[in-house]
Image (cartoon, rainbow, N blue to C red):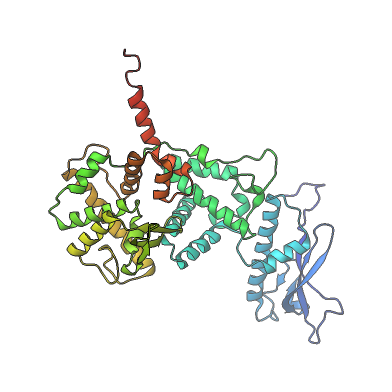
Length: 441
C-alpha cells in the first residue's frame, strides 16, 4: 500500500483512445494509440485498432468486455494489447539492465521493427533449428545439452533476457553443475556453448554487449568482472594414446570374430589418416577418392572431407598403409551404396543418418573395449575408444620425426600451440626419465 505523502508512481506509457476531432471517423469510432513519455518527450503511435468511446475502458486502457455494446473482437484486441504491453516492458527492462539511455523512437523500433526474440531460450531453440537445417547435428547436440542444463538450473529461463546473463549468472550456473557432480571438462563445453550463443546474439544486434560476462571485447566498462573459462575450468588430463609396442600388437593381432576384425581395420584406417573422426570416416564415399600428382610428378590418390568439428576441408593423401586398410575392408566386408567403408548400413539421410552413425560409433567403442581385454592390454588402455586413434597418430609421428611442425601438419592444426597440448604428456615422460637418478654418481 502507498504511504501517505508518497507520490503515485505512474508508468511512462499508456494505451489511449484518440478522441480529438480530427481523429473521429464517420461512424464515431476512434483509433487506439500507444503513447510514450520518455526523455521528457511525448510520442503517439497509432495502432491498427478502432473503438467507439463506449467500447473503451479509459481506466484499464483496454476494450470493455462486459457491456452489451462491446466490440465483437474485444477479447482478441485485448490479447494483442496485452502482448504489446508485455513486450514493451521487456524492452524497457532490457535497456535498464544494460544501462542504455533510450528514446521513444528506440522503443518503437524494437517493438514493431525487430522481429528476433530478446529472450535467451527462444534464441537457443532457433540456433539449434538452424544448425539442424544445415545438417550440423553434432553441433546441435551441444546446444541441446546447454538448454537442458539451463532449464534444470534456471526455473525462470522462459523469461530470461540476454541482459540477465552476466558474470554472477555464469558463476551460479557453473556452481550448480559442480554441485550436481559434473566434471570441469563437461562444464567447460557447456559454458563455451553459452558463450557462443551470447556472441552470436550480439552479432545479430539483439544480445547485451554491456553485460557480456566473458571479456571486455564489447565494452570498456571499468571494474567489470570477467569469467575466464580457461582459468576457472582448466583441467589437466593426459591425451589418450596407445604406446608403439601395444599399437603394433593391436595392428598385428589376429582377431577371429569378423566384427572385431572390421573394428581393427577401421581403427587403423582412422589412425593412418591422422585420426579422422568416426562420423567423417563413416560418410566417405567411393567418389571422394580423387586422382592427382605428387610434387615429384608421380600419380597419387587422395580424398578431401569436411571435418565435422571445425567444418574445414581436410585433404588426405592415400599412402600404402591407408590403401591397404581400404582394400582389406572391401575384400572382407560389403559396403552399402556408394560408401567407401563398411560403417553405414542404411539408405537414410539427414538427422536419421547422423543418429545411425552415432549408434554405430557406440558399438565400435564397445568392441574396442572388449578387444583390449582379449589383447590383455594393461590398465590405462582398457578403455579404448575412437579418440585413441588421433592421439596415437600424433605421438607415433612425433616419436618418428621429433618435429612439432610435421605433427601439426599431420593433425591439420591451425597452430603448433594446439599440437603442443597433444604432446604435453610425452614431454613430461621424458623429463621424468631424464631426471631419474640425478644424484647417483
